[in-house]
Length: 297
Ligand code: NAD
Ligand code: MG
Image (cartoon, rainbow, N blue to C red; front, side, top):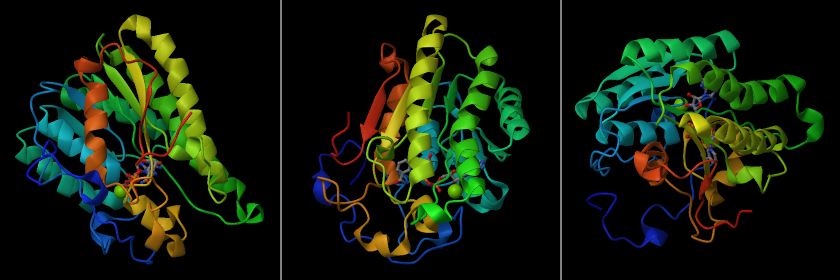
């Protein structure tokens, strides 16, 4: 494939074999994956769709956020990359790709489950980029627990803080800085509609993300600030290999989709670019499902 516009059969465009049954420690690094994911580094071709934009991307070190960061830079945006401090090496790899695209990359580690850090991140971004007009919330926590009896209050709390409270904190802090035309994108999941039995806390946060985003979309639309949602299906990322799935599920990961395989982060880049770009100006409060064909409400 020469770039993302090359005519291709999506069924076998990427690995159809499933993935090794090897778990890694959370949050997981790209460099720890035995089968490396595609983030579009060698294929994503920009065409000026985000020229001059100033973006904050959370979870930008790896997986879906990494693919978004590469695409945003190649479309002409400067980006603040947020991640957890233990993911510094992954984040540095992304920063290098952003800079190779001729754009500014700002490394901004912060734990989004801590209110003060989530709020401070917005100010770091505004200062570093001289403003902010795209808030792309990709960071998330997913830990599979087989039995309800083993799901701790600590995990339940941490999943909600990371996935839901952080949306509230970052958006509330960002709005006073956002000009009309700015965009906010959150990241839900197929789990919001089809929860897996071992993802009780996680799936519930993803439904909450859909709802908080649709409420915010209505409130912010009159200000010219658009809120939209991307809802991925199964994508091969460190999140899945580091406890998001039981390791024994990994060989079959993604084969439940109509297309028959897991997605690669590169296949989500276009969704995040579209929703940030002015070309989607009349698209508000929408959930863009990118999931290999699984039906959604
Ligand atoms: P990933 O592991 O590459 O990215 C998740 C990122 O979340 C991590 O890199 C980390 O930087 C960040 N994160 C976790 N806890 C954090 C915290 N407390 N503070 C700051 N950052 C934190 O995995 P991914 O699959 O690319 O996940 C990105 C998003 O996509 C998540 O919201 C996830 O729920 C969502 N999603 C993923 C899939 C999938 O199959 N991979 C499916 C649906 C939705
Ligand atoms: Mg990571």
